[in-house]
Length: 403
Image (cartoon, rainbow, N blue to C red; front, top):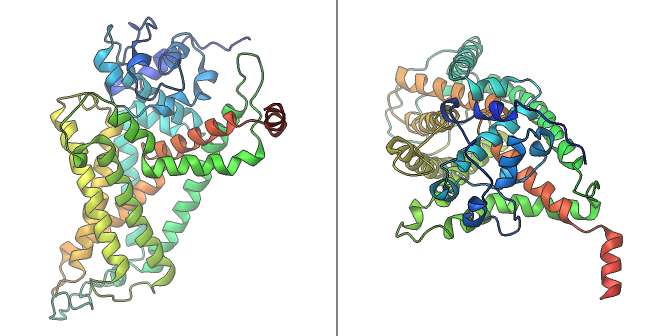
């Protein structure tokens, strides 16, 4: 079967690695990475097959291969590679490269490859959102209600920036990212479903298996099943569960989901700006979610700062950018929940609220272009893989009759 060859593919992927210095040219496909990988049981070529695709320039096949999304960066392959080829960092760079290729705007690739472009886009977006929000600025209510945590709330945030204006911008942003993600998702689905096997045939993708495949992939993402299996089969460790890589990752994800649920329910069922006591259920859910997410972020950042072990010893700027942006958003959100109940409003409280809204909007608009997109594409890749493996109805019936 003929393959389209891109001789510059490896150089393109290298630019998505830490500092653009990724080099797996030492790899001679010995298979050590496959032997030590906890997730290679059902794929004898994982992860070395993906490295080989990049080496020989098979871009189309690489972008359609779910193996780049199977990796959870435990680092076992890099620790034990006899040639120090760093396959773990290569897999991370390959995922970033794939996201940039799915993105129709081309902006994702620029942000992954260039620190300057990344920071510039962030600053321009932040400035735009500040001006947009302040264009409808209301008054600053500085009068005291004289009752700490009374439930009334002396800092009237939505008098400062009208809630309808904030929510209107939010809906517009969700529409933009929805369209952007839709193009990326369609691109990925098209590439995967067009892929042929060694016999030159495409998988059947039976309709009856679509929903079960999606449910299985989503549940895998939510309960971190593969991540836990990967983490559990690493070399024996006395590390407590709350410090395990999968638990830290789950804390960030579930904390963020809790905050998202609280915000969504508030938007749907609570009048904008209406006062609620600190023990209001959605406020408590957002508080707990924020603290859980902040815990995971603190561990992840501290490990990258210390850089004492794989996979934290080499971090791309995109890793830092995502972690710091999310930390800033969560931290300002938690502070907003505090200042709203203080008896004496302050300019600091209003500034924190404005900063939180701007950072939240930055996260939304940049989601298809940053590490956040990994959640969508990894889940989609696993769903498509399970769907492709499902037997066609006629084959299943024939197999049952022959049994």
